[in-house]
Image 1 (spheres, helix red, strand yellow):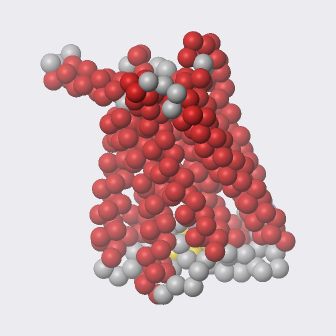
Image 2: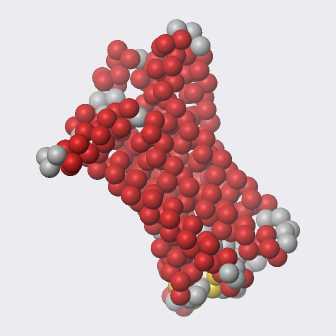
Image 3: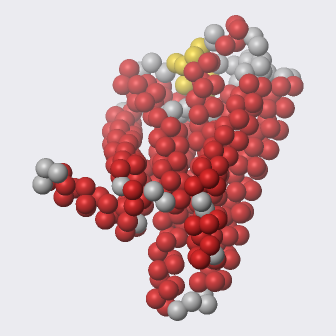
Length: 317
């Protein structure tokens, strides 16, 4: 590993072209990020404190929310610091750490959404055997596998990325991601080619394949729902709708960001400034905010738990 490269300082060129839009974006990011942290912390605290929520679905939700906080915190405090101080530089080591956290966030989000889809599938298709299938032992292992495997694969990829030769030091995006780092590599660097191939494999393994599995499970769920009575249909759909909404939002955001980053179209100067921040907001700011909010509004059990603890707080326990 080349220590001279690791000591390099990179520059975010996009921030210097924002002008007065910095203040607007800062307020937007700060508002949504704080709301996301508060909503996430509230739902996590309810799941932790209320034993009635110690169920597989909410344990998986807890893991999903933690992952969302890690992903958003890997980006937005740094972005807000740049917007406040105009210091648009980042060390290469810090950049690689950000790449690792963001890639892990995306991969773990999809694996956990797939695990949650499996949980809903078992709940609907094998209701009498649900607690036998989704026992504490299996739940624990699903969380560990859904987290550790993506993290280990991403870590291996980042180790290879850290060995590429850099011929540029300016980043055209709002934060460091794998594409932005590979764009800095020398054109004849073999490591950059290998890293690009591994990145595509990772996208397929932790985005395309999980997406296919979730869609397949919901197609089967829809087929079984259509055979139910109207009342049973509504109840079944209510148990799946929070997960389905989160899955659709995150899938749209990740697919849009991935495709837009890869095709890299010719755009105007104004679009070159707006695009990185739109992609960053769409992929790493909105989904972590949506996750606790959707479950907070859609889940009767979480709403019931919230009102229970709110009454205790008002009455002074």
